[in-house]
Image (cartoon, rainbow, N blue to C red; front, side, top):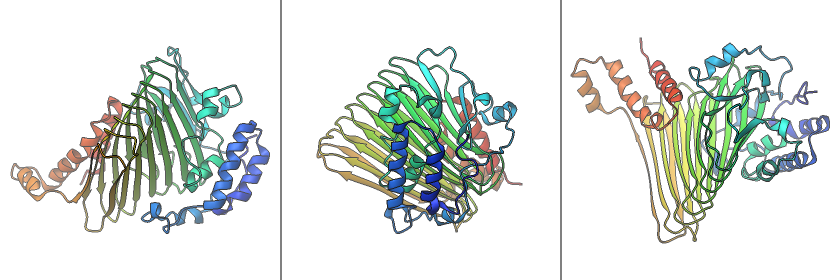
Length: 440
């Protein structure tokens, strides 16, 4: 029995009573039940964040709580392999894990043949078997005591993707975690755990989109663990319904000499919030965070990032670009924490924003908190409109105004898109950007 069938709640604040039904109906192992109990206990203490919370001051999630969400519907659309292929970045040759409303669709997913060092699949299918790494890391890096949505996700932990690369393994093909929202009003709490053992290498894609336009909530948590000398490129692309809400927490933990390259691309959803946290807990580990957010009409897109420099000799780099049109609102809050023992830290953070209308708004706040004295740390933010001199230059060469605007917008966005090393993703985003700003 699917424990989410016929379980409903009038709003997220009613989650405690809903959770009791959920827990009683499920037969998960004891350690999973303990994680869930901790999640619901913390959610009961902190609840859904409000704008009184400094971390959520510019992002009002009140409307989420007022929509009568249920966890899922029994009847889902008949998503076919043909549908999936259209969502797979132009037929990207990848290991594919498909989830519909947070539930694993084995018939639409692919096996890991030909990759002896790779194991991946549904968390739910794996948690009953002995999995030392799974138990050691699941729900250990994303905190439930200071983020109500992470607590809620942990409380209703039911399924998600598990990706495990053994020591020294080099995964040749990307791993694509494809999340499809049915569009039937509801809420999904997906959980992803990605572990790379010592010296392993992989590329993992998370993509989120809607089968149809509707109001629903995607609440996802992804935890990534990079052991010594591991190398991971992680790309998250969010293109959900313009009526939907998307809340995500991405937490990474890195050991010595590991290297993490991340990309966060947010185009869809009425409200999108990404909380991205990195912990550099080994010397010479490094992280690069790239982000692109594009919003129009009444969309709100929020990126909160935090990089924790725990050990010395660790570089970090952040590059986030935002493009806002109509009455859209953007939020960027980037924090770099350097602990006293993290000497020789080299950290750079940049947030650039392009406002295409007089009504678009951006709230940007880059921050440094440094407790070491031998570091190189810089941060900055810019807010502007299309450069008149650049427009004049293009128009003087016979290029119409709207095409000139599109060229400049495209150039601004591709500074981030071109950092993605997976060609089909880069090409599809590049084409989508041109279509987005196509004017009749």
